[in-house]
Length: 224
Length: 224
Image (cartoon, rainbow over all chains, first blue to last red; front, side, top):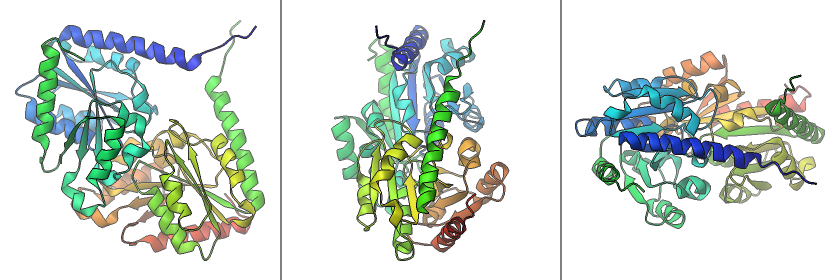
C-alpha cells in the first residue's frame, strides 16, 4: 500500500483557512484590506505615505508593515498619525495569514475603513500566500526594468491593480512602457494600471480614485 | 517517548552535501564559482555582460542564469560568445545546489576559469542556500534606497563583495551613501565595496581588479 503525504497542499489549505477567517473579521468591521507587494525599494512605504496623507480626512486608515527586520516602515507611517503595526518575519520572505491574524487585534478595526498591508519586498513568494485581504496591488518601478512581467509572471497574474512608480526618472532609464504593458496584458488582460511618481505626486490622482471606488464598492456590499 | 523530526535541518544539510559536491567538481576543473545575488532589476545580467566583455580575452568564462521563467538572461550572455545555461526554477524563489548540479554538465568546465551564477532576483531566499560556488556577491542599486542593509541583514551579512550599481543616476535619488555604508559595516565589517554604473562603465575597474585577484588567489591554491 502506498501512502501519499500531500504536505504542500495541507500547508496551503491551512493558510487559506486562516485567510478566510481574517477576511471575515475585516468584513465584520467593514474594513477593505489591500495587500501591497513589490520588489525591495520599489516604493511600498512611499505609496502608503502618499495615500494616507491624501485620504486620511476621507477615510480611517490603518497599516500593517511586513519586514525581515526593523520597524523603519511602521515608524514612517505611524508618524502620519494613523495606527500602524510592524510584523518582523524573522527571515521569512513573505507575510502569511497567521502573521496578519496576529497583527489584527492590535488595530482599531471597528474604527477603520481601509487597511493597507505592506508585504515583504519580494516578487516571488508573497504571490503564493492569501492573507485574507480583498485586493492585491503590485508596485513596479521604472529602475527595475521593463522586462519584469515576463520574468515574474505569477506575481503579475495575481493582482487587481498595478502601480508603476518612479515615473519622474524614466528619462534616465531605458524603459519601454509599451513593451512592459504588452507583457502585463498577456498575463492579466485589462488590469488597472497607474504610472505615477511618489516623489513628485504626478499620476497619484488616478490611483487614489481607483482606491476610492474600491472602498465604495466594498462598503456597498459588493466585494469581489 | 518524544520523537523529534528535524525536517528543516535535514533539507539544509542535503543541500549542503550537494553544494560540497558541486564545489569539488568546480575545484577539480580549476573553475572559480561566483554566486551573484540581487533584487529584481538591480543589474545582475548587466554586470555579467560588462564583466564578460572586459575579461573574456583574459579568462574563459561561463554563466548559469536562474529565473522563474524565460531565457532572456542566458540569451543576452550567450550572445557574447560564452557558454550560458538557463535554469528556470518554475516558481522557486532561489537557486539551490540541485539546480546548479543539473546545469554543470552542460558547461565545458575543463575549458573554463570562471563560472558566474546569476541567482533569482530576491533579497531573502537565495541567502540561505549554498550552491557550491566559492564567492557570494551582492548587487545593490541606488534606486532601491539606502536602507536595504538594515532591512535585509542576512543577505548583507553573508556576502564576500558588494556592488552598488546605477551610480550614474544617484543625483535623481535621495541616496545617502554614508548611511548605506554604515549599515553594511555593522553587518559585514571591511566588506569589499564597489560603487559603479553598468550603464556608463564608471567604477568598473575596481570590481574587475577584485575579480582578477580572486581568480588569482583561487588558482594559486588558496581558496577561502
